[in-house]
Image 1 (tube, rainbow, N blue to C red):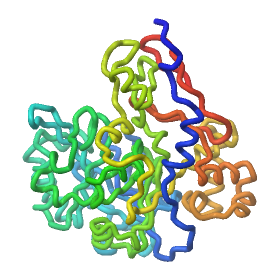
Image 2 (cartoon, rainbow, N blue to C red; image 1 turned 30 degrees about the vertical axis):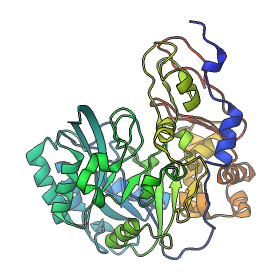
Image 3 (tube, rainbow, N blue to C red; image 1 turned 30 degrees about the horizontal axis):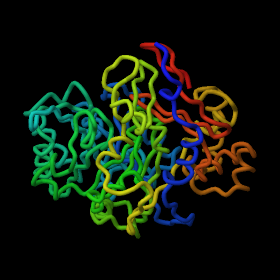
Length: 453
């Protein structure tokens, strides 16, 4: 099938301009934060599908130290085997937080009891597929939830259990276990499994949670969305926007995170989130959202990548197979937004957009992320600096050049300034970041074949 060239790809120039301006948002000032807490509260264990066998508490603790994460979610406390390891390996530390028994007395990391749950059910004649994060303040609260969940569905087959009851019933179970528990809609914009997803979500928090909406204080923006996109919805003005890695392997920890100025304390962190306290909620660490798997629209199998404008012109239909396109996050935000791009609420929590250090090294060396040289240099740099976040967030240009060499230091500076080019992700395919040079546009590769970047 011969298709017009305009049907494929996204302008490299337009993507570059976006990453430099509207998608960067407001940046917090660099300052020494004695009480800085970096928290990644959405991860999975080895008991979830498509996860690394290394997603166990001991390995996660080691990686958290390498990354510079102070508080890490346990993930998957609903799974009996993982919860058994939580009970066996962790002991109470600060209020509502836990540490490895063998690391008693050491500062980091602390663990928070967290889980992700999938609810698939029918409401108003439409199938809904909603993923939610649950934070629990105590082992007892987690046990109560697990007891309720075991009576209502299968919690042994997957670390992220699937239930047939509603998200509204889920939050009731969480709060009944302990009023200090919190439910947060996970990766709120992804098409298939989220509160605002184009395929199975709702148009509002109230549509999903009804009378329990007053207990929804935050949403997780997800890798394909950032706070700037969410600021376009006035309906979210009183909702905190949090970011987490959703890691399925240890090296992915911290690719998104939350940065607080507070003590290590579950209840204080929950209070900060509920109040959207700008003095204590310093900023979120963000993917550039174009790099996320569902930022733009398209059909991966057909090699079609569309901007929201192209999707509307195509009537949301794939020009290769004539089926409906997978509508991504940017289009969905455009659909629900009541404000223009670039709008910034006066009390917005800042955001800092980063590229993981291994990706920066890979491009600096013109090698793959999994290459031996990249892995070796990553270990050397994080050991010398203290952590990956120390390198990406804190170190000055001269320090970076001395430690990592001028090319890597230049790459980190370009990332901090948003001076890069990205081919947006779509239909389950991650976006492609270019720090040096320009990202390529996707080209047609024929039906059922992915286009080349």
